[in-house]
Image 1 (cartoon, one colour):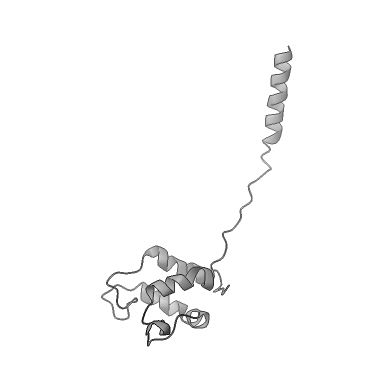
Image 2: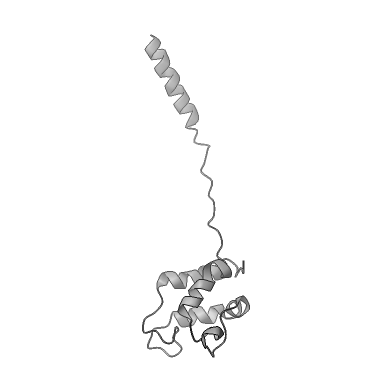
Amino acid sequence: MKKILVLTFIVAIVFANCNPSKKIANVPPPKLTYETNLQAVIMANCVPCHIPAKGGFKKAYDNFTNVKTDIDEMIRRMELNPTDRGFMPFKKTAKLSDSVVAVFKQWRADGLLEK
């Protein structure tokens, strides 16, 4: 009788804590920012053309303002094929990965945050 009572007590505790009204909170992922997510990608893929300190002579993309202003054109040119006029990155023979382009698109969707 004691075993049945203890077992019933344990089962009652388990079911009491399995409340379906307790939902896991949907925490949205943090928004992407220029400083945290884009700056390093730009430095790795847009050198030397768009980085003046590295000898670039094109519009500088080493600053938030210029990247924010040109984001639509940057994405458009990254999505071109390497044989298309205007393809970027110019000196590369292959497109940037979809995941890299997705970072730019997500940053735009997140509101073009600087920090």
